[in-house]
Image (cartoon, rainbow, N blue to C red; front, side, top):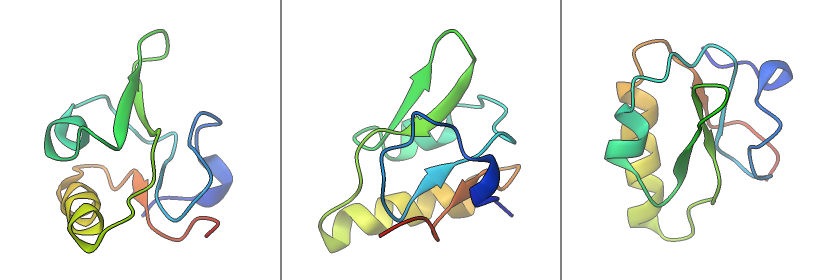
Length: 78
């Protein structure tokens, strides 16, 4: 389960975020490329845009549910 206190500083403020458990597997970036981006230097993903539509939220939830290490959270700052 993702931990708000360990989320990467690059995450844009909002509901979704990625924390330090990320193993850079690329699943979230493949599932929801409009919302997740890779930090090339650190080798991890972060949320660079929050979803706005219901369809966007569904994509982010799909990424969250598919994350093998549960590094994506959906309880960030709204």
